[in-house]
Length: 131
Image (cartoon, rainbow, N blue to C red; front, side, top):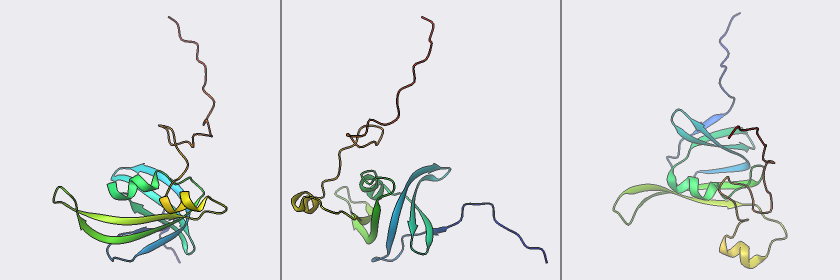
C-alpha cells in the first residue's frame, strides 16, 4: 500500500490561542522562515515550533540553545500605544544560581550576535583581501 510521507521537519506547530498554554522543553533556537522567525523547543511529546511575536522574541533571545525553557501564553494585552498584543511568561531552569539574580530575571549577558559574553563565539577567519 502506498502512502504519502511529508518531507517537512517533524514536529507540531503551536498556535497561541488559549491563555495558559504552556510549552516546556529544551530550547533548540530561533530560525528565520518565509513567514518570519520561528522558535523551536524539543518538548516531552516531541519537537514543537511556533511563530515569534515581538513580545516572545525578546525574552527568548536571552535563552541559551540547549537550556530548559518554559513558555506560557498569558493572553492578549493592550500596549501603551493602544494596540493588542500576545503576552508570554518565559522561564528557564536554573541550578545553583544566585537567588537574587533569579528573582530579578537576570540571565547571562550576550553580545550582538547572541553569544554569552564569556563565550567569544567562533574564531574570526582571516582572509587575503587585496588593498
